Image (cartoon, rainbow, N blue to C red):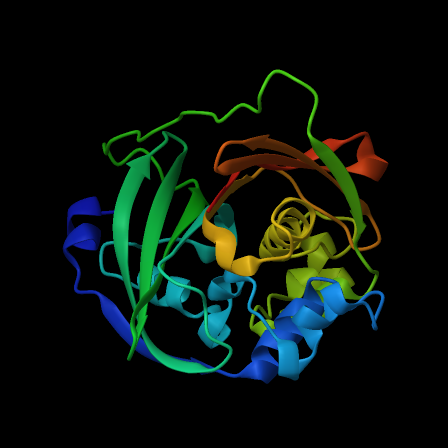
Length: 284
């Protein structure tokens, strides 16, 4: 059955109660590679509960990241989940994330675009606790073979980096076991752990979660250009352009422009193959 965007957009939002504490935050940060060197005060802010702060990209795994799956269960979305890819991610922060909280997460389909041979579904998630709104998150799901239903094509604007040398270039090594650790935050897809499953999916070996690269990149920007202050991040968006294999090195280029940092990420060992593009950090 083809996608019915009218039904999907009109569906009632789905509400879920989520909770987290310092252990969830620490596990997420460790999954991004935080904690090296282990006694470095700048790294202890990610790993030690007495001085812990929360990287804003934690919003993507809060409550084990079930909000997107809930949104994709909306009526009118008859999608082959074996053919979906994570196309893009954006988070807007309404205030700094607490180390411990119970919140209500509300998810709905915010947009459905017809790309011809594929469809793009945007799931919007809003999280609120007793103190008010925490974040708004847009997840773009690229569904291969699901286009052609006659809907709007949607935006296709590219965010090219400035035409000059980057202000900073840093490299971050992805540990061999990093996907195994990151998946403990809630993404249990065997593509990131099971070699045989990865081969069936067309990859030579398991690949890193795109949202792990997303979090590693934000940490690099915060640590390099924002003085290690996670509370300065206002919004963070990216487009997933390619894969990363555990054991590879990420090359992260950063261009500072007023209150934004434009970033691109490539895989060093594969001739700077694109990994993240159209990547923007808005900050105070």
